[in-house]
Structure formats: structure tokens, C-alpha cells
Image 1 (spheres, rainbow, N blue to C red):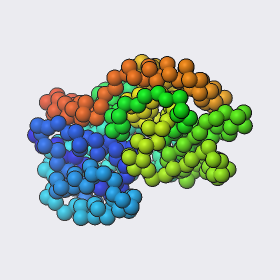
Image 2: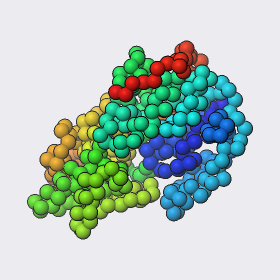
Image 3: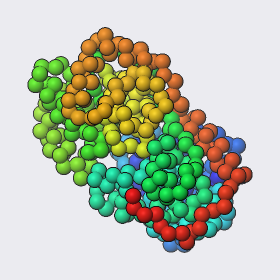
Length: 387
């Protein structure tokens, strides 16, 4: 059995975070024995076409010097899907969220029910206040096509519950496959009282609670707390409050805002960290704190983080509620050397799954699904109602 891997979005937009990172790790660790064959949607012919297997090499190589534009130039030879058509009834794996109506219609055909989708989250629909107002509308074709897709897997129990409880509104089904925690490649860290930096990783926007973090540190500095904040990520266009705070803190010597870091750059910053801050309340999973814990670095997180469901609370300060006061309190707790040392010792006890286990689970799900397939949903069914 050949598994055709739809990487249409990844080839067009080869970023190195979020969904694109999951796709790269799946390519790197695909276990076989069934081959993973890349393919891309052809919008003119409205079919899937094979891509040369050589596309996997630049996708899985180290980041190209020059950032995203350099990545796109490196993938330019694969930009036009000119390969042979993917056969009807072939096993088609998609781990992307997309907003192309023609691509969605391709999956919504009766033959499209042989597809396997890995689903991340439904936040643009369930929490639209956190996103650009156009995001939920643009991706509606994706939700409509989902009704016809026979095989769905989810990155967390939370996402699966939202899918069947609020989006598709039918009995819960599908498997949950947790993401890997070992993607950074950073060696296990050890506590050093000299570490004074708290690292926050990810897009700077309301759902991440970026603004309360910046305000909390401004209060801590006013109190005379000897602590540093390093924020790694880009401020989203709709994050007006966050952009204002970034400008206000630009001259603060204890604050750094870094963008466009490679994995090596992230490793360097995390190797200096006393802890990672990730108090986001809007995630389908939440990879960064899992990666920090895998390296032995404690984390400050929201109790709402799906990735930590079922994980022992070792090495973590879980906040409920998340606000300036609770964030500042967690930082004060971690600045006590004794408390920090205990959290570091706890983090070292955790055993978290890696990307190899994730890829094996995806391959096993696809193999089992081909053998035990329920009747496909009707492509003519009514589209899901907005939650």
C-alpha cells in the first residue's frame, strides 16, 4: 500500500512552525513499510498529482539562510504540480488546514472519503475573538469537506471533543495521536541559579496571553526583581495591544524580542532559560512547553493546555486563572532557587513521547483504517453549523 501525502500548503508556504513542523517530522520519521509519496493539488485540473520524492530533502533540511523567501526559492522546482495523477481510491493522507474551495471539493467527493485527515483545532470557529475576522469564513470549505472524510485523527482529546460536540455534532469517533516532544534536539539541561531568563515562544497575540506576560514583567522590574524576559515570535497583525507593549518595552535592557529564529537559535535561548512561559489558553495542543519539559526545563502554563492532559504535573506551574498577577506570582516562585531546583528535578523525571512514536502511530492508524473502514459520510450532507 502506498500512502500519498498531500503537502500542497507546505510546498507553497514552507514555514517552520506549527502545522508545517508536524508535516516535516512525519516525513523524517515515517516508518514504512508502506512508502510515503508526496503529492500536491493541481487547481487547474482539480486533481492530486504526485511530486518527486526529492522534494522531501529540502523540506527536511536545515532552514535555508535568508528565511522564508529563501525556503520558497529552494522549493521553486516543485511549485508546479506536473506529475502523474494520484489514482482514484488511493490512500491519501492530509495533515494540513487549508482554505481552497477547489481542494476541499476534491476531498468532498465520494472517492475522497478514502482520505485520512489529521485535525489540529477549531479555534477560529469556537473562539473567533482571538483571530482575524476573516479566518473562520475563509476556512469554511475545510469544515464542509470534513463531513465526507472517512478517517479523522486528532492531536488531542480536546480537539476530538470539539469536533464531534460542536462542529460535526455526531457521536464521537476517531483516534487521538499526541505530537512529539523531542523536535528541538536540545540536550537535557541542568539547573543553574545563574539562569535569570524566562523564555516565551510562539506567536505574540491575545490567545497566547502575551500582553499579560509583558505587563507582569513590567511590574516585576518596578519591584526590583532581577529577571529577564525573552519573547521569540512575530506579533500578529490583529494583536494591537501586544504591538503597543512591544514598542513600549523596546528600550528595556532586561527585555528581548526575537523573530525568525532557526531551531538552533531557539535551542540557544532555551539553553539559557530558567523556565519557559507558555500561558496560552487557545491551543489545539501546545508543543513548545512539551519540548521544554523534554529538555528538563520547567514551564509556566495554563491549566487549559490540551498537551498536558494526562501528563503528571512535574516541572510545571499550572495557572488558573491566567492574568498579570498569577504570571508574576509564578515568576517569583521560580526565582526562589530552592523552588526552582525542585521543579527542575521534577521535569527531569518526565518521559514524553517523541516524533518517532508519533509517526509510527500515524502509520498504524492509516494501515488499520484501510482494513476497517466504516461507510463514508455523504458528501451531500448539510455543512456543519458554526458553533
